[in-house]
Length: 170
Image (cartoon, rainbow, N blue to C red; front, side, top):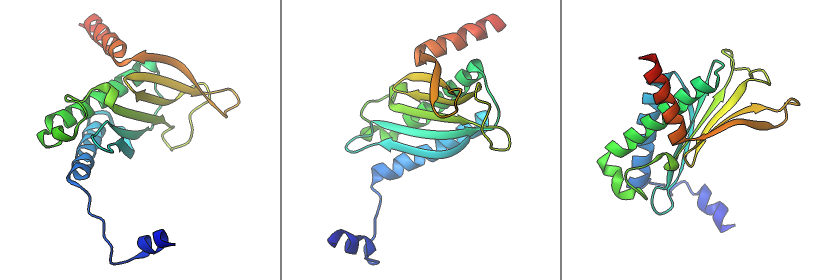
């Protein structure tokens, strides 16, 4: 009962810590930069920062179908932009579990939708993710009830593939 009374008390107020304010700021800046670079629509964020900041996360909507190559480009662009925003902010460094922040410290989820916001076809990529430095690409199973990973690679492998493709195009 004390908990309920404490939550309902209109005179109590919560003031975010400096660490929380900085997390929110870098997330906001990164989300905006990623949107401007890729057109991905930010809709969620999170993190792990009990003592030190271990992880920061962003979720996006992508309103057109993508293949693995385009998905890779989107994930790498989001990861690198987020890392850059975090690592260039000197104020947050003392709170980071490691500096520089690395792909293993960032989580990105991209939910693929049709232009009107409806679900993509079952055999199309529907979720792209980057967790602990591993990028994965998922489709719905044929029954539409589950997700199936159709490709997985490390951040380093994905970056190498993008660099190889860029070298071939030159």
